[in-house]
Image 1 (spheres, one colour):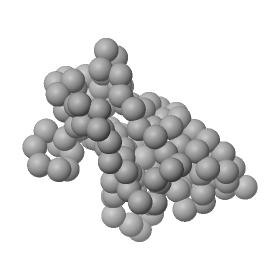
Image 2 (cartoon, one colour):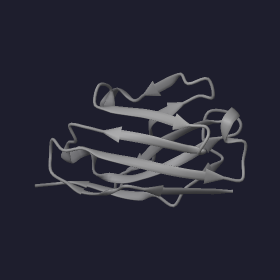
Image 3 (cartoon, helix red, strand yellow):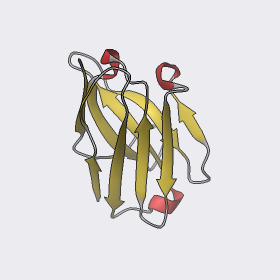
Image 4 (cartoon, one colour):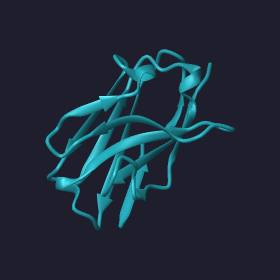
Length: 116
């Protein structure tokens, strides 16, 4: 199983970034996949998830600013982030749920830093 994130970096407040997560080794098409983040000293938290049928869930702190999408042909999930705030600074992880509500598989993470 592999989940490989890309697209992180340094961005100014109010800016945008698009994260990508290319996956392999598990049944992507029927899996819920999502983005999670962990800031220093804090627990990992859900940012957004997308189910196999395309329905989505967002944490309240990103509603209206972030958009998750998936491409089943490419086994890839994306996170379009806009209106970024300094408090969005964290390592962002891609995760795939196989049972329950929390991922069984994780990527290595990509750093997102929002700073002027």
